[in-house]
Amino acid sequence: MRTLVCVPTYQEAANVDRFLRAVRAAAPQTDILVCDDNSPDGTGELAEKAAAELGRVDVLHRPGKEGLGAAYREGFRWGLDQGYEVIIQMDCDFSHDPAMIPTLLDAVGDGVDCAIGSRYVPGGSTPGWPLHRRLLSRYGNRYTAGVLRLGIKDATGGFRAYRATTLETIDIDSTRANGYAFQSEVALRMVQAGLRLEEIPITFVDREYGTSKMSVKIMAESMARVTTWGVRSRLSGRGTPAS
Image (cartoon, rainbow, N blue to C red; front, side, top):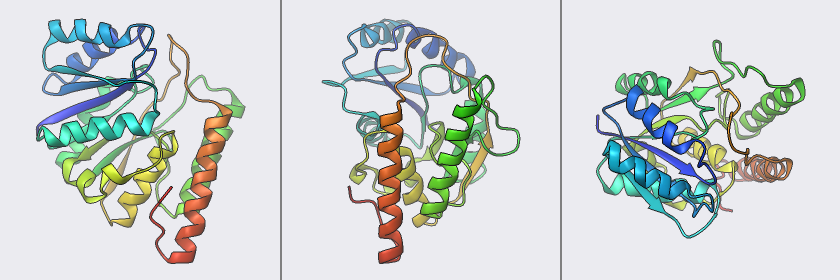
């Protein structure tokens, strides 16, 4: 399967070169697309230098920071237009282990429409997290899955392998969320489309270098969107996200 790893970056100068090399070592058959939001620390330029050495790495230089969803929409569309059969999304900060890429690909090869790297199925873990963060994340996921009736444990996780047909089926270009709610919106659309999803246990670790983009404000915005979608779903009987 012709595979693309799509990774959004902003202020990841301390990680991007190591990340690209780690992906190439773990999954040498995959190509890589870096979607950089005009990082002022030179992340995009460092990615270009690594690309020149490694080969089969492309860099999309976006005009500015528009959010996770916007970066993924552009990256996914680029990959679909290039004819990739599988597109993997993951973070650049090593919270997602590149060594797990082959495992996700195996699941897609076995017939699933999307393999989800999950922290909350047996075998998944979040080592080093303080109790308040564990509770916030776990119960935030339970709330999201319950309100949207998703039937999955990790609705907000960002380590996924999609079949290209999955992204076309859910009309990825029409998704609207730009923050971390993007993950929940895509999960909702996949469930509504009746696609086959499989959660693969992963170990999610905190970044060593750089600064996390997550904040209480971002999480609150995500929960507000999820609540709106859930209400619409119950009122309409389906409730595809619209805003």
